[in-house]
Image (tube, rainbow, N blue to C red; front, side, top):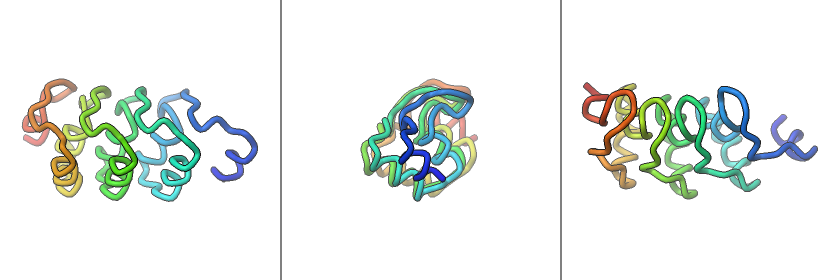
Length: 126
C-alpha cells in the first residue's frame, strides 16, 4: 500500500496528525521494510514533531532495535532532543529495552543529556 501511495505522488515528508510523518509511524510500529522504502524515497530522517519527537525515539520507545540501528546507519541524530522522553536513549531506558539502550550507547548516545519527562536516562531507567 505504501509503495502504491508513493507511486501516485504521496509526499514522503508530509507532516500531520499525531504520528508526525510516515517514517515516524513505520518506526514506531517496527515496520522495517517500510522504513527502508521511505529512506530510499528521501524522507527527512531527523524530522521533529509528534509525541516521541522523531523516528529514532519512536522506534526506541518500543524496543525496535533493528529499526534503531537502520535509522542511525542512515544518518539519524542519536542525541536529537525533543518529544516526551527528551531523546531516544531516555525513551528506551524508560521502557527497559536493553538491546536498544546498548545499541544507542554504542552509537554515541550521551548518557548524561538532560531533558524530557524523566530528566535523564538513569532516572528514566529507575
